[in-house]
Image: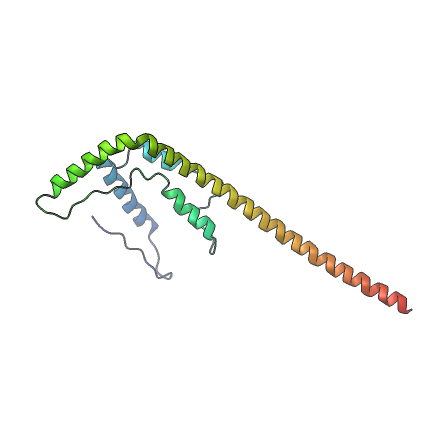
Amino acid sequence: MAETKIHRDPVEKIDIEDIMKHIKERVRQKREMGLYSDKDIEEIYSLTLSGMQADCKEGDKLREQLRILSSCYDFRNGINITSHRPVLGKLIVAAKKGFIAIAGKLMTPLLDRQISFNFHLIQTIDLLIEELEALKNEQSMLRLQHEKDIKLLTETIEKLKGERKV
């Protein structure tokens, strides 16, 4: 499998099409291995969080953390089973996959509840971030209004002091 190189130098041009080609190939391989189902892919495509942006503004740590959380809230398909043993490796991998399949069937109700909780928690955090941003905007507007009011009061006081002297 070819590895994707991510350039750290901002001057170099990043080939988004090449990266997407590699991502699509990895998804195709994981689908063939049975790690992704059509339903999983549909859930990912339908996942939207209100107010989420594809690019996070620099310094927007909350949005970046929420983006990371939203990409991994459903942890059922994140298991990559391998073995480093050349001879027994296939047997070990098959045994592990069998165990995980059986354990997965037993754990499905619990995992579904956890995944649902994770999803709703991410939505709640998203709403809190929106509220925080609205409060920050309101605070900025109030600060500007406060500065204007202080300036006006200072001018009025100076005007009244000038009238007293006359």
